[in-house]
Image (cartoon, rainbow, N blue to C red):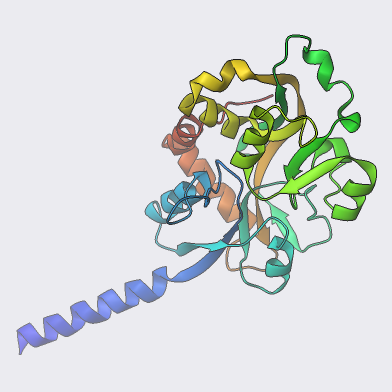
Length: 258
């Protein structure tokens, strides 16, 4: 009888713990290497997925789960309530009219321009970006366009090809076909990872010294969600203190930018 009672209490205790720890927080994420990378992989991976895993390890109040969306669809999915939090974001990337709270800045980075490295080209090649045949990512907000991601606006004001594949954009530059693309806008950290994997391509690329934009990454949280931006800040501070954030920077070549 005592054994049965002990077993029942143990089960009840486990059930109570599970109920307490299962406040599920859906975390949206879209193709944005090295933060989310789903191309040519069986499952999404990257800094966002690692950060979600780390958040789940340091507490039992919330269960953070990844919700895959796209750069263009992320606003519609947010409005539909499919997720309540999104990482490595910026209010200026189309979020000003949405009910979100922003965490503190916890990571920096940026986007640069790349071109094929011809003998006659130097950094002045990037002075007139608007006059070049460009390639970028559908749904992204770029500095050269004043963060306007509307496709009609971009096609009207710039000679730009929009794709959904960061790797393809780099390779479009490497094939040296100006009629296809002269300049690509790429995340500096992803470019660093690419060149680390393919060092033989370093000499073939001219990389701009100037940034298209500098990232000041925050986590955006839905107002009145089960978790607040203040609570997210507390968890991020804990991950900064235990070295997790620094490890993410090193793993994904996320160099600090002032």
